[in-house]
Figure 1: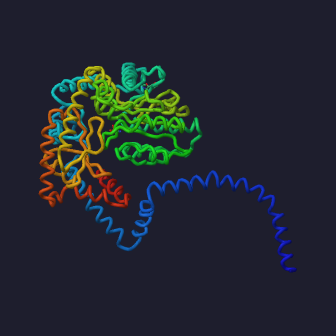
Figure 2 (figure 1 turned 90 degrees about the horizontal axis):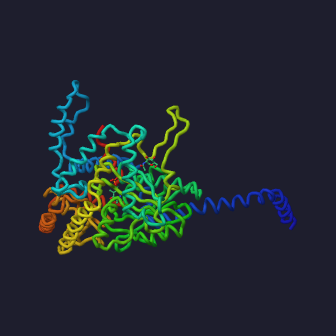
Figure 3 (figure 1 turned 90 degrees about the vertical axis):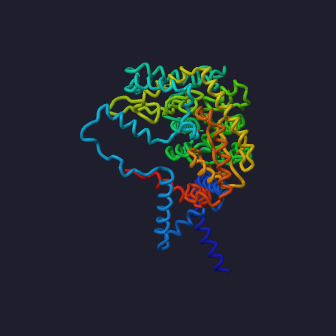
Length: 540
Ligand SMILES: *Cc1c(COP(=O)(O)O)cnc(C)c1O
Ligand SMILES: *[C@@H]1O[C@H](CO)[C@@H](O)[C@H](O)[C@@H]1NC(C)=O
C-alpha cells in the first residue's frame, strides 16, 4: 500500500512537472496531426486505392530482388537485347556513317544538293502515316509555297526584340486573337478578357498553362504543394509539366465510353488540387471529355480547368458549322480557364506553332518571367524559349490568313467525310471494333480475335505508319488531308492485314508486336520506363 502511494505521489510530481509542457505541446501536436500527418496519410490511402497494393509494392520488391547476386546483370543483359530490337525495329541502321565533325572547307550553297539526297531517305509519308503531316492533297501544294515565302522573308526575326520587328509582334497578337475568336472568346461575358501567346507546339502550350495555373493558385489560394488531376487519356505533356514544375499528378480512370470518369476525378481532388484537365478530343481515341461537367466541377471546387484543343481547335468549330453534332468544348463553357490549340496540326501551319489561351489576364500574368537583377538589363520573356523563331510566327499567321474561314471549312469537311467513311469501313470488319464513339478524325480500333500489334506489323510491312496504343491494346489513325483519297486503300490493306495475322498467328515474331505486347503486360512499369530511356539515349 505504501509503495503504491509512493508511486502515485511521484507520478503526480512528474505530471505537475510536465503539465506546462503538455499544455504547450498539445495544440502543437494536434495541429501536426491535423495538418501534416493526416493529409499525408490521406495521400497514401488515396494512392493505395488508386494504384492498388501490387503497383505500389512491386517496385520495392524488384529493388530487393536486384540486390541478389547475378540478378542485376541478367536484367541488364535482357534490357540491352530488347533495346537493340526496338532500335532496329523503329529506325534503320546506318548511323555509323553519321558525321561527327565540321567539314574542313564549307560547302556553301552546294549543301542544298546534299539536303536533297538526304530527303530521299525519309519515309514516303504521303498518305500513309497517322497524323504527323497535316497538309496534303493537290490543293494544298500551293500552301507550301506560302509557308516557304513567309519563312524566307522572316528567317532572321526574333520576337524577343519587338522594337526591331513590329511585324512579328503584330502577327503573333493577331494569330492569337484570330484563334481565340474561334474558341468562344467572342462570348459577351468575356469581351477583351481572353489572351494568350504563341508557343513552339502543343506541349509548350500545355507546359505554359500548367505553370501559369500553378503560380496563379499559389498567389490566390496559397497552394504550395500543387496537385493536378487528369484523365488517363490526357496527353503525356501533362506528365512532362508535372515533372518539370514539381506538381503531383493523378491520372483518373476513363468510363465505359472512354471519356473522363467524373466520379474518379472527384475522388482525387483535394485541398492541394490546382487544376483538372479535359481533352477535346484526346489523342488516343479521338473522344471528347464531358467538358461542361468538368467545367461545373472546377467551378464548384474553385480550381482551374484546362481544355486540350491541340487536335480539335481547328476542326471542331468548323465541324459544328457543318452540322456535325459536337458537344461544347471552349471558353463558352463556364469554368474553362485555359486552352491549348495547335496551329501546326489542323491549323495547317508550319511545324513549331501553337497557341496557349487564358480566360483572363490574371492567370496569364503568371506565365511571364521578369528579371530585374541581371547585369544584362531588365528582361521579360513570355514562354519557355528566350529567342523565338519569328519566321514560324509569320508562317502561322500566313496560314490562318490564306485559308480563312472558307478554307478551313473546306478542309474540315474533307477530313470529317473521310473519317466517317473510315469508321463505317472498320465497323463492318468482324474481327475489329472501334473504341468508343470517336467525335472527329482520330479513330482507334482493337480486336478480340487477333493480336492487334501484329496487325500493326502487317500494316507497317505495307508502308503504313499507325500509332500503337495500350489500355486496351489498340491502334489508331489520325486522318489528315493526306488520307482523303486513301481511305479505300487503307481499308483494303487493313482487311488484308487482319486476314494475314489470323491465318498465320505465328507470323511477325521478329516485329514490334512481341515488344508492345510484353510492355503492355509488364507489371513493373519502372523497367518499361528504363527501356524507353535506354532506347532514346542512343547518340552522343
Ligand atoms: C499533339 C497533341 C499534344 C502535344 O502537341 P505537340 O505539338 O506534339 O507538342 C497535346 N495534346 C493533344 C490532344 C495532342 O494531340
Ligand atoms: C506574349 O504576350 C505578351 C503580352 O501581351 C506580348 O508582349 C508578347 O508579344 C507575346 N505575344 C502576343 C500575345 O502577341
